[in-house]
Image (cartoon, rainbow, N blue to C red; front, side):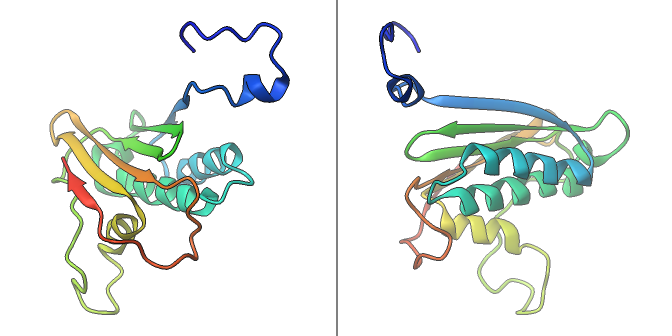
Length: 164
């Protein structure tokens, strides 16, 4: 909150101060923890238009970390979740690396009945920005920026910028 003085502020002023609200949590690299991470994010954004997109982003990114990286291997596996309440909302999942680079596959990849590769494509289409940084050796952080006022059932936006 820096040098912001909130002495004598109302509860609402204190809660919605201009400082960004940021949360970080670490979860065991197990499938049941994907649900726990999603429920945590849903609670943080309850009542906000973007809650369903945030929940979808957390579910997809966390599931990919558990399914496709060392995060889901062995008792010591973990993934980290970072969420920032701002406009845009920032959602990021950090994994333990390994097994390639997270990639948004081209539209229509694998045919219309393929279950592989659709999640990141969907997030890419819902997000304002999408990116990946890190390495297979040290771990990746996959992140999305989401319009705080966007609902899941809204019409598609213009294509996002992919950054890494």
